[in-house]
Length: 206
Image (cartoon, rainbow, N blue to C red):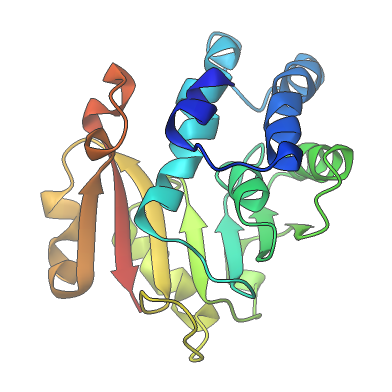
């Protein structure tokens, strides 16, 4: 939790309390349903919560922004972002029912009124959102094809509506087809931990 406060210094008491609760909640749920690698659960804040909040370093979502977290798994990046942006709405989607159950229960335990969850495939979602966020669920070009239909035309943020992904490794080839409207931001620009030396936020306007 100290890692979150290190980089985000203007958190409200409610946000701090919610971030602090994540440790117990995810340890408990992960003992029942394996949503985070058992070897990695003790790195919850560094590898999952802070990683999710890398998106908050790239864009400050305006109140009223609607965001879909596609392939949310156990709720990343959606749950940490929902804590960070309580005046935005987050719809967390995954094709695996037990993972959606964890997201639903964690959101309820945290009293996150701005989170909804859905057990379905991305292809079935027809609603519109200002942004789709995702954590490396598939190659960027494939993801763009799926979510293009879900991007709203109404613009309310400083960045045009689009897709924001958390990805690692070499990204030049993967982003080449969308190079003219894609921005790669290394998270090492913001976070000094070694884990972030190969991690980036990839934004593509749609």
